[in-house]
Length: 257
Image 1 (tube, rainbow, N blue to C red):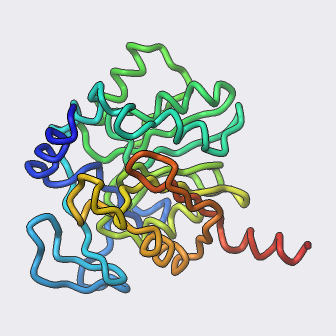
Image 2 (image 1 turned 180 degrees about the vertical axis):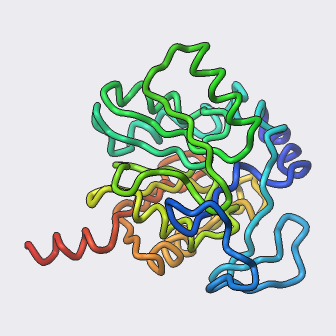
């Protein structure tokens, strides 16, 4: 897919990835809009929901009908997923959560890097869940577990994950505050959270504004939810690589030193 066709697809779509939101790892119902902590509302932008978090309008979400675009043959060249995965803090026995896994483009590539571990492919859309399960059957990969999430739950056990990733997903979360709180609990004490987001600072990145994020905005939101940046880099062609640690872990390490 060329850059022009990439732009066209995004102009036609309502968003980029699957939406997951959470109030905690065991909740089954989403929080009510009237009680949203830290959110405000405005007239929606054509590409947005009108709901704002820390000054950022939350973008629309793409349905599973756009799944073929996630598996486009030009994606490696455009985004260099191989470089992103090579940079991830993975061990052979790592437990990884791919939040908003979609078709599993990252899920199954990461699974090959953690042969003694596991990858949780967390999804809410039934069509994506069916596609993920079919892919497991077709490939015979035995260390991927599909997890049916809801708008109020990731359904991941507390303290179970070494690395949680969101690939061009975070900017679409309707409840980023709640999901970050849930992921904080799901991560192990030394667990990390990785966001890959299109670079909002770079006007040459051919993505609509609401589907990009600046590193400063991402860091501001994550810090407000007790995640501290460990690695903020832009070595990928069009995305930020934003890796975070849990705040209490960083504090404990500083005390020891």
